[in-house]
Length: 192
Image (cartoon, rainbow, N blue to C red; front, side):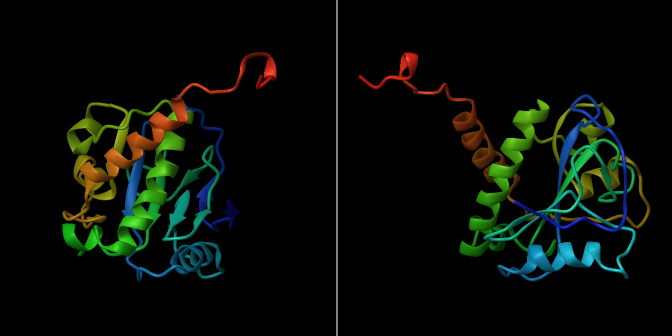
């Protein structure tokens, strides 16, 4: 996985205990196979805004921009507790738009990333919503949910009401089941 360090973030020493959720975002950028790289470069550039994310994903790339132990500036009110993932696309996309060929390929790649993060940090693959955030549960959420939970005026609404959270969590769960499957290696390292 390629790493392009974002300009704006907080150096921290977070562990799995500190990480409560994985937050999904839309990049508000075109669905193209170069979008993850372009947004990661934007986060890293000299004119970068006070924004960053741990990962950027498009159809063929996952770019890490902030180490998971550090705090990305992904969603005001939810930065310290979250790992933030930016997806190529727009919050205005419909459910159908999020499930077209491009988006489905990207979401499948992102679901594998989410499963890996959830596995390493013991985060359940359940959708939190704003209530779950306010109750301190662990799971998967969105930028909009953080905006609502933390009562952020003028906050973001991505990845939008059309985001296919049920399908996405299903793909992530399928991947997590594979990650947790016992190894099929022969005993004593011999095949015969």
